[in-house]
Image 1 (cartoon, protein in one colour):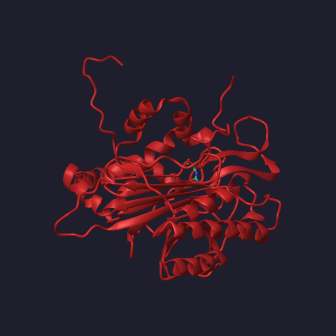
Image 2 (cartoon, rainbow, N blue to C red; image 1 turned 90 degrees about the vertical axis):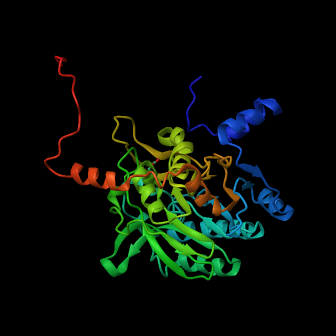
Image 3 (cartoon, rainbow, N blue to C red; image 1 turned 45 degrees about the horizontal axis):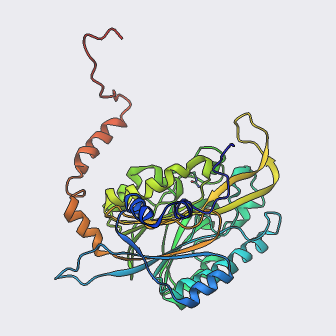
Amino acid sequence: MAVSLDDKFESLESILAQHLPADVLQKVNLSLRGSGSIEVELPANAKETAKQLNFDLQGYQIKVALTEQTRPSRLVRIGAIQNMIQKPTTATVKEQRDAIHQRIDQMLAVAHECQVNVVGLQEAWTMPFAFCTREKYPWVEFAESAYDGPSTKFLAERAKKYNMVIISPILERDEAHGDVLWNTAVIISNHGNVIGITRKNHIPRVGDFNESTYYMEGNTGHKVFETDFGRIAVNICYGRHHPQNWLMYGVNGAEIVFNPSATVGALSEPLWSIEARNAAIANSYFTVGINRVGTETFPNEFTSGDGKPAHTSFGHFYGSSYVASPDGSRTPGLSRIRDGLLVTECDLNLCRQMKDKWGFRMTQRLDLYAESFARAIQPSYQMDIVKDSSSTK
Ligand SMILES: NC(=O)NCCC(=O)O
């Protein structure tokens, strides 16, 4: 029987739990995820609401930070929300966006009940991921101002009400600069202000991710936002394949880096659990991988440039959002097929503690690489390959 990552199974975790005896499962989980995260009890009311509204709600604590003598703990509850589109892609732009707002409204209320301090949404959360179509309209009509567009206004109100920092990745319309479009994350403070924006640095040119048709590589560098709940950065989707992108957020002092994404099983699922986790280890910060969920179908057929027949669906967005800790451990992932809210409590002091333990920052040799990169971009650069003088090849 042919198996595909477009198949709708719940999660790797649920398969393991279903098939392994409890004592074996414990060993497997320890080996897969490390000892850092333990399940925490979330409020009964929040669990009941999640059940009624049919979304996956999971809660964990990353428990490995030491109690320091000279610094108080900095406990922060991070929320990660993944969601499907709520209306067919043939509904009007307003109907589609309003329906997603309504769903997120429900999930934010539950996040508040679970005492979440900082919550991240998925890439381009207000719209279907229509960039596969290469059509401009109506999809570009989902673009909005990062500062006073309908989604920022909607979230700013909730951010203030719930005392929660919200990371809102949207398709941005930059009216002040010739109406250009960007793929942007808006950082909204718990006081309801837009602290700033950060734009996607690396634009995919792979599979049906035809995003370069719509927007250019970001021009905001590697900003880190100082919030009441830690220093936060956002590495948007495809940027997770570039270690130097992760590295620069670390150089600028990030403690939590969100990776809002929209990616499909057949392309990237085996990479998903590795990349954000590896970045957390290498850069001594927490990472929050958030992936879109569901299968989206578009009105008109499009081709993938691979000789295969035209189709109307992108493939399955596999959710599986998770949090990785600087000590290398990680939480289980959310569902592959349902909306979800993941709540993870961490002590941000663990970032410095891991720098002290492993010394990755201290041994990073930025000066060496600055010099190597500067040479590598010269037109005259020759690759530094040493050959065997006896070889005839
Ligand atoms: N949205 C986006 O950048 N997707 C690219 C696919 C991937 O990086 O897995």
